[in-house]
Length: 628
Image (cartoon, rainbow, N blue to C red):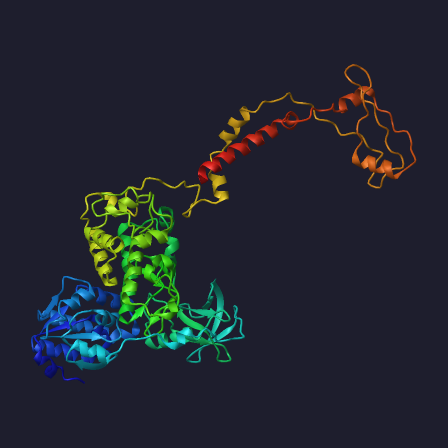
C-alpha cells in the first residue's frame, strides 16, 4: 500500500476526478488516502459534475462495486465534515482540469481507464502538476502530467478489428434448445422475444435474463474478443444490458451471450411526437420527460467512468418503461479500450466522421459529446431532431453540415421551427439549456455528457419547485391544443390508406345521404322475371328453344330476342329440333326488355351506379387533399 502521508506532504491541495475513487477497488486503500488528506488538512478540489458521477454510480447498483461505493460515501462525508472540499463552478471535465494544470503545488488523482484520462491526454496545454494514476487498484505516481502521458501511451486500433472472418457454427437455435454458459451452466431457450438483423433474442428459465443468439456468420473475431473483455469488466448495472455470461453450443462453439432483460418499448417509438407520447405515457408531465433524459445520461456517465463509449448512439438503442427505468440495449457494439465501435447512425454522428470506416479508428470522447447533445435535444423535444426545420435546406444532412439550427436564445428567428408546439417547448427551457443548445448546434461547441446531466437536473429542480408561473410549462407539450380523435388511433407520422378511409368525412351516413340526393333518379322499372326454361337441364336438351317474336308498341313484330348462352351452345351441338311451348304474346312483351340506349346514359341508368360514382369521386378528392 502506498504511503500517502509522505507523498502528499509536498503539495498544498489535491485535484480529484471521481474515476480515481472508483478504480481504487480496495476500500482500505481509499480510506488510507482520505485519512492522510484529513490529517494534513489538504484542500480537495472536485468538478461541478462530481456529484452527478456519484449519483450515476449509485443508480447503476452494480453488485461488483458495492464495497467501493460504500467507502466512497464515507470518504466524501469525512472530507465534507472537515470542510476540505471545494466544488468547481464548471461541470466540464476539461475546464476543471484547465483550472489546475499549471499549478506545481497541486497533484491530480485520476482513474487510468476512464474517459477523463483520455480527455486529459487530449488537452493541448502545459501540464506541470503531479499526478497519481489509479489503475484497477494499482497506483502509479508521476512528478508531472507530461511525464505521465509519455509513460502511459494511448490506445490504437487492435489489428483484430480488420479481420472480416466469422466464427462458423452449424447450429440453428429455436425454442426448446439448450445453450451453455462460460461457467458450464445449461440454459433452455423457452420462448422467442424478437428477431433482428444480428440474431435472435430468447427468454430463458431465469426470468431476469435473456439470451442473444447470433445468426450464422454474425460472430466476427472483433465481436467475440470484445464480448470476452466486456465480460471480464463486469459492468452489471441494473439499467445496462451488459454481457453477463457468454454462451456456447454443446460443441463449445460461441453462439451469443446472456444479458439482463429490459422492459418497455424503444425510445424511438415512445418519443415519436404528441400522439405517441399520449399513447405510451398518458399521465406524464414535462418533469417526467426531463427525468427520463437524466436516466439515459446517467447510463452514459457510468460507462464513461469505465472508459466505455457507446459509439452508435440513437433512440432505438434504448428502451423505456417509465421515467426512472431506461435501459441501454444492443450493447455489444460499444467501443472499449482498443476495440472500436464498428457501426454508427448518421443523424447522431459528427459530419467529420461520415465518410470514414468506423472499424478503422477509435472514437474520441468529443465524438460522443456530439451524439449525446442530439440525444438530449431529441428526448426533450419528444423525438424531434435539432436540425429538423421548415423552409430549410434540401436534406437533414445539409442542415447538419451547415449547422442550420432553427432556434435562437432571443426568439428572433422562429419562422423555421417545425409546427406542432416545438416552439413552446423551447420557450419553457431554462436559459442554461437554451444557451448550451445554441452553442452546440449553431456554433459547434461540445459539452461533456455530465454537463448535460447537471443542466437537466437544474431544469428538473425548477419544475419540481414550481418556479414557473405559466401552468402550460409543466405539460409534455405546452400549449398543444389539437386533441386526437378518440375513434382514430394514430401512432405518429402519416396515416395509412385504411386509416385515411376510416377518418374521411365521406365515411358517414350524412355524407352518403347528401350525395344520394344529388343523383338524378329514373323511374323505377318492374323487376324482370326470369324466362321459363323448364325444358332445359345441365345435361342439355335435344330440342333447342324457338326464338320468340317480341310485340312492339305499334303492334308489329320486332327482331327476335337473343337466346341465352346455354341455349345457344345446345343449339350448336344438337341438330334435332322440336316445337317449344308457345308463350302468350302479352306475357312475352312484359318479360321482354326493349333495346337500351348505348353510351354513358345506359351505364348510369340505375341510381346505385350514380351513388357509387359520386362517392368514389368525393373520396378521391379527400385523399388528394390529405396527401397534398
